[in-house]
Image 1: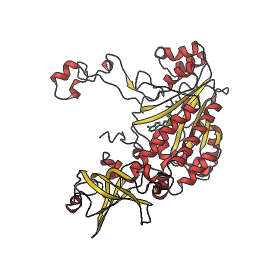
Image 2: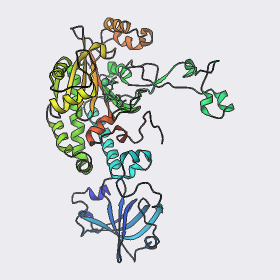
Image 3: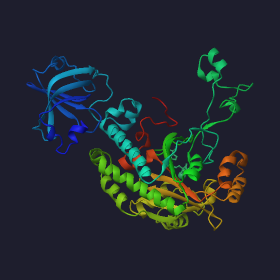
Length: 475
Ligand code: 4AD
Ligand code: MG
């Protein structure tokens, strides 16, 4: 349907051609002399209006009531210009075949608008709705644009591992990987009984991954650094996991992250890359997903097109953490969490900065206190701050977190000691500083937060096909 309606004359150039359309019925209006079936195949938001007369082959299926909302069908016919105001063309049906029936009395996706909360309980069927179809297509376009941007700029895509022994962010928010005991598997009723246990019945974590502890990755950064210090600019794009028990509209337990890593680069190069990347992908969806973006502008967030156009064209705001704190202290409003130098910025602070102080523009805050940031960030000369940056956007808050990495062996070893991290386990990471170290920098962007930002969808659970949260890992 996209190929037909997306043509130069919205399909008029194909009038007279014989076509086959396969899809799912959105609505079926039976009138005395003619029946209108709206068919959607998911390729675009638009339906194909199919006009069926009683002489069409398979018309008996209309009469018997088989053409119901949700049923799948194949229609063959001739494309004609349409009298209707909503479309330029429609299909005059010669043959109609219902492929899969759909009982209207039990089909959960009815024509009336269902709440997002309800649709999450039927995540296997929600892609049949306009909103979730559009989100899926824009998510796909953003993924495509991501690869396009990095490939066009000389980056190499690296797959980072999902199972790992290291905790990149040092926040202890990892999921453990467990090997089931084969012997126990056979003799037990549930897989849970096959989890290795100590004598007193506790889970034996030392037995996790074939005898060694292993976790799901929280970030591919450390692995990306190994390739950046060999291939120069690289990026990862894959699933990451966080065992944080936060039930917010911007946290998932499983999310996708894009992590570029730039060799021979400092924090300023990093911020420039983040800016160029974000502007590129925003421009890409504005140009390539017009129909879906118009839908979001009308139904999900009024004004999103203007907002995104601004993002694509205007410079981002940049300020240091110290200046941001000063701005918050001077703000004429009370925050739930009072601000002082050294504190982590809460979402209320981020909102104030992006939404009120700078009128909805993306803001990059840099040079954070070292005590609230990860071990690998490069120390600034002041001894108090590190070369870190967060990119904040309205509604979503932190979209990107990045930094210049500590490339000096001595500094890094001292920092690991200070934080009482096990230096031994970082032996390979330290090797990168022993053998041909280079200044390098990178960032991580939460892909679902980007989808939220680009579509206006307010809950992150609706920005990924199958959300994993503390409350749900069904489907
Ligand atoms: O700020 P974070 O924790 O940074 C890192 O993991 C670095 N190692 C990245 C790097 O420099 N290569 O996470 C990066 C981004 C955040 O800005 C946010 O957009 C997203 O990942 N993110 C989440 N998205 C959804 N659910 C969660 N629980 C998230 N945690 C982080
Ligand atoms: Mg962060």
